[in-house]
Image 1 (cartoon, rainbow, N blue to C red):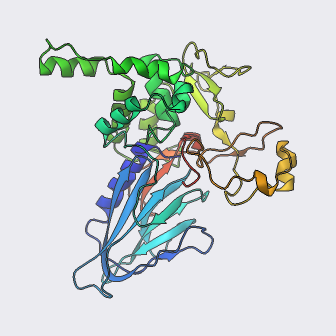
Image 2: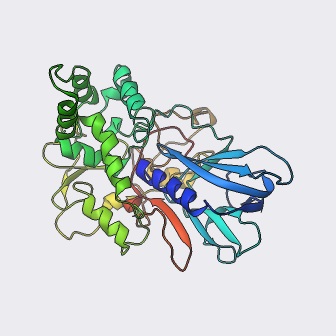
Image 3: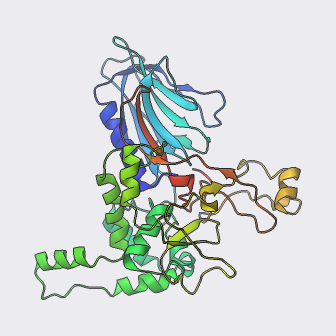
Length: 398
């Protein structure tokens, strides 16, 4: 699933692709999508985008003189596991285009589409960022750093650092591949206690005798974990191109894979955390490693393994069926056992892991990083992760 850099690239794609376009008419939603209808109609409007962490805000702004007169409308998207934006000819809509914005005449009619193969993506009307998400690691670094260090007493930091890094209340934009790359660069065991790692940063102060240029140089040469949470995503954005690509042969995806040092890299070990997400690392996993967990090493040229498989979660509004409970070894669920709400510690975008029984798995679609590209199928900005596994932690809404 997409992480902060992919959402940032997607917003850049929308802004560049739609800069000179005028849209008109109604917004269309596919009949199979469970997301809300978008009650917007205008004879002429523009579209712009802004990303923050793992969310993207799309703003529809009527142009002067457009009919009927109305205020701008904003929607906030969360991409789930396979969400993307594509700009295509209106008579060649891609499969799974669940929301469509059409250009106004004259000129060839185009459609900006929100495409979501697995339908885990979501949009909300109103333009408000999801409550509970922390500052963006890319665009709000100072606020992000302060938010983490001010809240180290939170029980989230009792967890291993690899799990805490997926908590979007504090690390909004960090996902599976980013956490592996960040911890690998600092040689931090993934299952070291998060508070132990982060408390040391509260006392980190540059020497007052250093000049400003010396302080900057020291920070660049010896960044701490929170600084890497900002700079490593920026590296992905600066790669340009598409980021994740849905086709393994894409040149941009090859560039991204070459950039990876740890995530799914040959010679690296891997373990599943307590949420069932695979963490890649090198060396000692740390004192909080799951008991009985078997570390596996990826050999050169190895094929994708179980870490690239995902289990599709049940609908958030339904309890598991009798068949699903039997397959998972879960007890019969009564009305009283169904939670009315979900904790910020849960991740809707990552597959749940049952406590008992065997898991049924489905192969995830191959990932790929996509900013703007032009092909016979139109422009596209994709955001599905390598193997579809970049879990993050937040509430049920995606």
